[in-house]
Image: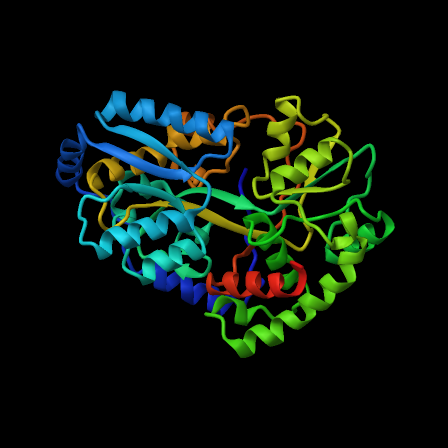
Length: 403
């Protein structure tokens, strides 16, 4: 699926940020340099710290690890983590102790976690734009491949996949789903107890907050700058007012919130709630294919756009297998690995590549007929606010609503 992009922030600001991130040339390693990296990578073991909560993703990583072993002699161990900040604490502690052979070689990361590691000097690089596979990344059509929550990546992380906030309903029960924030409010009021969202700081819950924040503010300029107390107070006042109106109509009167999007999806499958949310536009299609959701389920995004971003892989500054990590990151970015990842039957994670940069054979691997549950009309992507807004939003939400 190709994600479109609009500019809900000032076009000047986004273009300026993109230009800053583009200061690094997208030039692949010379053949000799890359061959040397591949030679040094052979025999290395890469400890890849990545979320382990999805069987489909875990199976994909197992396949990718097998290919890395066969093709490059690189062993990849998937270290399943539930919370990226725990990994960051480990890297921080190892660096402080002067440990040069760290326990983390590659991480699946983006957003505020990338911002933290970048600011604290915990990342190796720049390396990303020197990967041979980076030449086929869609840096112009998908500027978030160089911007992570409005922070320039500066080559410190390699793009891996695309994501966008997406909702799902059962069309037999909800033939007219809410297509914007006002309609969602009206839908919740008309269907008391049938709508909810995950409790922040769960990622999906925080993303929902950011979506509402964007929808209730006409001017988005402040969101693409580091947060300040003044900007936060002004911008979030209409957010809290909107949530105060919404919560009494939510599941359990807005007094409790599910732990995560997976819990809501199960509640949705059981008919307990009428609407579920995800950050993978193809998730409903995956669930239908796995017979966990009926074929009457449809996916949609707000017509004016929903929050979207790119997720990345990065190498800690003290990784013990930097060459192996680069080789594996390059393979994950290859047309073959990206096409497999985009396949609904495998994962269904949208690609970061520009299809017009691929050969006819490579493009053919991405073509597939639309499946039940896929978004029929993708909405514009609203780029993520600057990562510094996340912690402030989560803390204030907890202060107001967690009790």
